[in-house]
Length: 185
Length: 185
DNA sequence: GTCTATAAGCAGATAGAC
DNA sequence: GTCTATCTGCTTATAGAC
Image 1 (cartoon, chains in turn red, green, brown, purple):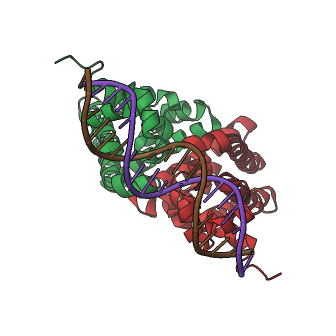
Image 2 (image 1 turned 90 degrees about the vertical axis):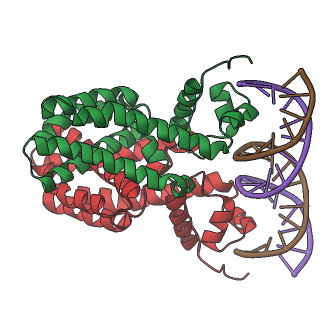
Image 3 (image 1 turned 180 degrees about the vertical axis):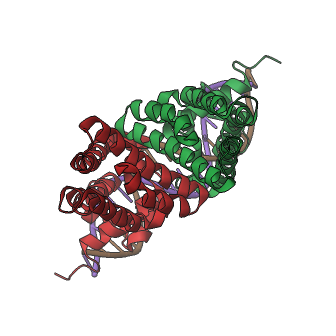
């Protein structure tokens, strides 16, 4: 049997880009087909569960990325400041300095929220716990660490929203670069 | 001719609620019809331009609210702290302690962004300028005031996103109550 | 594994009676 | 001003050839 034109990984990558650009509802099969270069029927070969399974797979893929590139480094070696800076570097790249939206935000809106809300809530909480862990290591008490970690997520998500509304990367890059010092102060 | 069953104002109010719950794409005419209690054809009597005009009207309505209840009070009488607290009180009510989403966020996503993006950008900037004005009055320099005002919008929008993801009002109420002191410190 | 063709249903939108 | 009935096009999804 002939090899597929593009790998499954590449398909997921392109679907991810499409969902991040359009959100769930606006990402029609026609658009997803164009984004991947595959016909609709081919998409159903990869994802028999249809658009919902595509988004679920993309969300899993993003969660894997989050775990590997953010949560594990946060829990790993280095000073608290180093670990936070590592996260900032990864986020700056992942969100393209604020040009790309966050699926944990987009998939929690409208009808999509019914399907993906539970998974998103878990991801957000895991992310928050990972940041809080760093702050505890830095000597802050448990409660204060949790609040500051939540503040960090608020700052990141808010910066993405404002960057999108202003159509500018400044709010996001500025927020990210100020974040580590603010969390450890 | 018989009076309408509900006023135009009430129709807009219910449409606003519907769009804030669903976003633009998920707010189908069937749902908007149900939300208002009017048949689709009746909605077209009020809004010949269809769903797009409904959302545009709702956005204008929200912008009017913002002007009357946030921008004008921010520019009005009172100490900087009093004026900021006034905004916080209004926002807490308007966003139902974080249960309701912000249309300036939702309508900047996906296909809706093409239509409403420009108007949303203007609203965000007007809001930011109003906050910055208070901070200038408090003695901060122009540049620092602008940055802190942007931080305020980031905090508000981010808190709404995280509150939605966590399905909790805590992130929003906590963020709002800490905001004035943080801006004026 | 990819495609063309097509089904079934819902979306936004309109006509015209009352 | 509101409704029922209807239209057109797009959406998701499938069948079946290659």
